[in-house]
Length: 433
Ligand code: FDA
Ligand code: NAD
Image (cartoon, rainbow, N blue to C red; front, side, top):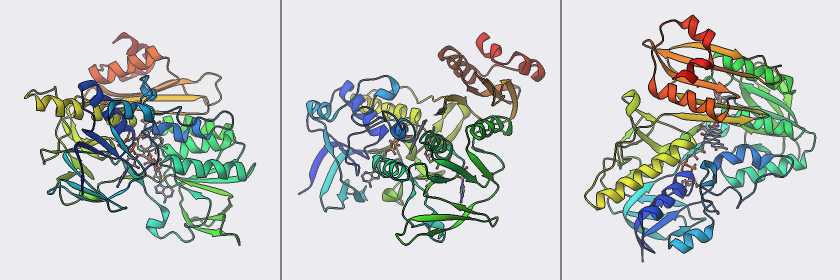
């Protein structure tokens, strides 16, 4: 017998939690909504896993960071879902989705049926075993996506006190994990193929600051090469990392952050896709009127830039979830909501650093401020200029007011007459907008 719900959210991550809160706000009757998650815990703020969760002193632990504390909202404990009559179906992996039959089947053989489905399965990590890297299945080679992964890494950090770690990848995971491993007194070497870290967003000028800062903290950085193999000891634990350039690094722990992939496999071929994600409209509705997709898996119209985009960041996962639920509830009353009009916002924190980015990182760039990694209070940023207008702004070390100012610039897109003048004005340009 299938368990039947009016609404099912497939996935129990950030989007799922924010969608549940929005359903509760809009009004949902007991028994109408279920969240099905392969994780064993209620939705939580995933960004904590690569930061405070791994701190050497007083690390963050659940229930401390259930959604929606990351955006200053109410913390939704498991009891909250019970009170609202929202069914949290945890430790349940869905292995088959039949969108025509409106049914989901779990690994345990249960069947669930729905009237409206919200796909919120997020991303999965890309593994070195996917490319057949020799020895990549050794023990103590870690990936980080879910709380279980973070628990295993935390245990290894404690077991390998003062040991050596190699961090493979120079993106978000690479930079955040290298910092937190270093705080745990682990000897850290980062390895990545590009000429500078986080090339998806950083310019050479921005990266120079972070690489210098990390080096001053004692993090070793090896650029322009990749890990091609691992050796292990008699217990099967990783011992060495072999690099393509011939170098061999000792390692007690390896953390791999070589990118994510949206988890769309369950609906592949059943729904329209675009740019690697599930194609939606401005209300996160797919080409099927009873199927929505939110968060990392959605490829949606980014109105500001007039194109379809997929965004793998937490702010969008929260807002897309809220938008989808508002649209679903409005449609039931024959109403509509405004189109999603998103301003991309990404951030990261590591050591004593904190940056924010708003807008689009395309066009020419202008670096401003103090980007000396040895400064006691570095504050610097970059403007991206396209067709004579500022379209993106990055700021390290900004105050809340300054961060608000750069967000406004990215949204307003003010014209720039003189690039040299902009470089001179720096942050004061943003504060005037
Ligand atoms: P999310 O990954 O949160 O949730 C997906 C859920 O679906 C999971 O619970 C998963 O188990 C479940 N699921 C998947 N397949 C399933 C199946 N078949 N059956 C049942 N359940 C299934 N962003 C940012 O802007 N700033 C930051 O600092 C960070 N930091 C950060 C740290 C780490 C370690 C990670 C991994 C990611 C970040 N991010 C981030 C990115 C951000 O967390 C991410 O964009 C959102 O979590 C996406 O939300 P979703 O709900 O789409 O997926
Ligand atoms: P990423 O795409 O940010 O970075 C991947 C990095 O690995 C890149 O530098 C890439 O060139 C490098 N790389 C690729 N192949 C490699 C190889 N064979 N050897 C060495 N390096 C290689 O992805 P990520 O850091 O793994 O993050 C995974 C997901 O988690 C993303 O969706 C990301 O947005 C999200 N995340 C976001 C934040 C944040 O927003 N602050 C923090 C953590 C994670």
